Length: 296
Length: 121
Image 1 (tube, rainbow over the protein chains, first blue to last red):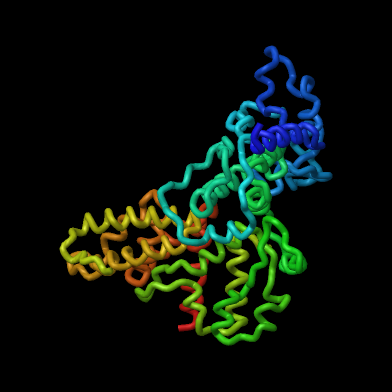
Image 2: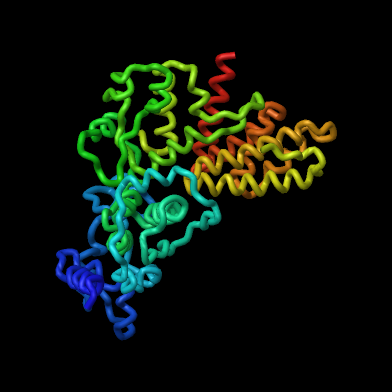
């Protein structure tokens, strides 16, 4: 038996021994039961993951699916509306999990995600939103366009079904099989974070990195340095926030995109800020964070 | 290298404008910034050519304000925002209000900058 075959077997065995083994119960397990039977009774692991009696934030919100102790819809003291019975049929795209175990480990770290904002081929069109989760590839998508396309689709889908919903849980469990360092998984998870107060984003910055998040300079680091601002200002607590990776990529991309101006010129926000003060740049940076849904 | 658009008809220029703008929207989706800016170089030439035409002067851009693609509408509106101020502003505002699109935040920032410049002048 080859080393790769051994690794495959170890991987498969390990998945049934781990405490979250319920994730590997096929999400459309109900189709193997006789008509009318309840999947949760036959597969108690699934039942433990979800109960309609648990109070949860409704789908469609950034914290959708998450347990809540209070009113889920935010209107007085009404009882929160449960999400209802799990419709396993909705996850047909995840039914074939067997292919996930054919994945050989790949070298991948968070640095790969920073390449997303770089030069990539543009052959694929954005897909319209759908209720189906994006198909999980059998290998980690290539850096650049392919991985960004997958992340966008997954972010849109988890935004709809709820980041903490059982659906998303199954999806992330499956995705982790091709995403050994969890960089893609955590980028998708963090992208739907709700806007947070500035203090909270600043407090999160620390020497230890956090998967799914990047430290972001409110006033862009390199252009501020080019303009001669001091390192104390640039690297100061006031100028640093920890934000979701996808938002960081979008903001960096926004700063570099050249747009037509009313005077007929064509410049990027980065260029338009070249001659202004540090404080003006900071106010602009804060506004961008608000527009991107990062800052409350 | 610059392309010579001086002998291209208005309709063909508009078609090319639409095609490249759609590709720009895809570039935003894929965070392909350099691709976005490269497409923008050609779009800029097309816009200037349309504005130079004595029988058009950018007027034909107005009909793109109703295009189904958001990036086409945004590019058309910003291209003539100095010529048809009110119409362009309405088009950009409608994109800014849509909220669900990646381009919406660009539109909001664009309007904010526009208003600030107006206050300063």
